Length: 291
Length: 254
Image (cartoon, rainbow over all chains, first blue to last red; front, side, top):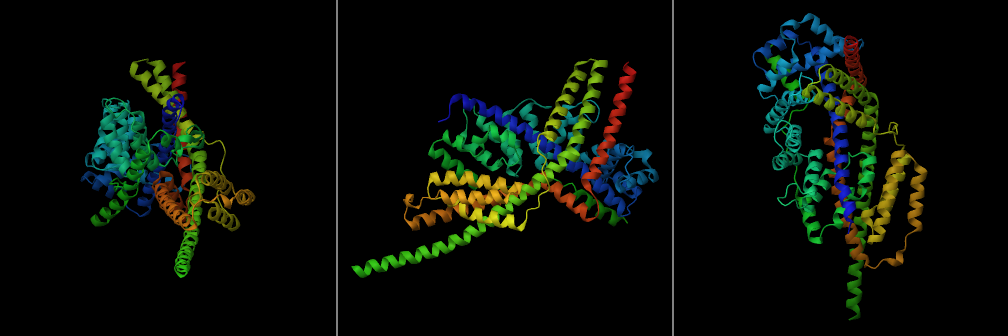
């Protein structure tokens, strides 16, 4: 059996591990999104579609065209001052110089247009921008609003973030059960961070009215969450939990068997979220249709 | 009576023979999958390390400037909202810094030699924990297998050889208490369970952002572009912008 004090160290260690993991994953996701924007802008420009035709589509309410313009102007405001000779940035500059930028050069405006038309990637981006304070004053209500919009349409990433909003009280009142509900949806689509967050919630006992720890579900979500993305220096602190041996030591044989049964029976559900590229393919199709 | 015993024994022998052949095949599959998983992990780690070094560090710098700007704003106009935003920006900058600089050791690009791969396969076949005969053996094999994974990722064929020697030296066949047939059956079950686990683990890796970023970067590289460098260039321009803004504000403040 594990000593009481050792137990009391595990939850903070897991939380710390989770925070670092989430920070690292956010840093990677941030780069991937930015890279997708660079590629998207370059690809559409490269295919010879004019900014005019994209703009026309956007004004007619095509959410993908609106999203493209938003990404374009968002990227462009940064790229404009760039001294780099990279081809992508040159395309950006050329397109901006020859396009009617002054009429619609507002990334924020087009993100909202796209988001209001249910474009999940734009909703996700809008929430992130509000959360990072990139759209003026930090607005937590808007953060939760746009995460919710995409989460309800089935975007795995936003389901996790909405869970985080309820977990930490961002733009909504703290509600652990509501947090667990959204984490669960994302976790079922295979979001590792949601699986780990759920594991921590069950382990900490916040989902039980009397605060009782639920080892069976903690074990299940931890083993699904895999720990593969947790940095080594954190693993050192939670080595015992990592391979689930110490958690097993707290459990009865029956509980372990039940947890293993749940793990084996778990099935991934599909993520309805938008890939960074898919909107671009749809946009190219729409542009080809309009000639 | 005598005939019956001989008959039973030979049927057992046949069974054992078949199971041995099956186990041999599963061992090869398991070793191959362990190798594939180790390759995937190592190549993702190397790519992640490069990303954090070339791009993550720049994001950390950008967030640092943004935190300084928010702190300047809060100092100029110390409302509750501005103070909270400055704290938030500082916290964000710290978290980005930790994420970007958490891995002290820089990982080289991962290009295992065919010889290294061959050795790892041998080790995985011989010492895989799911082929253990009893709990003590399993603990020992788990430790050696973890060592082997580390050695493989570090590209150290010599250590892999030593691990195999260490394992062979510690095998006590006389300690086996189970009948051979039971042991074989259990080994096959365990190996199959691990195979399923590896497949699940690889699927998780393929869903990760870093895997997708690596894929995007490889696709771009096929078109003669260097995505990470482009990304770095665009963040550098943002940093320059933020720095200018900070300096102008600091100047006006003076």
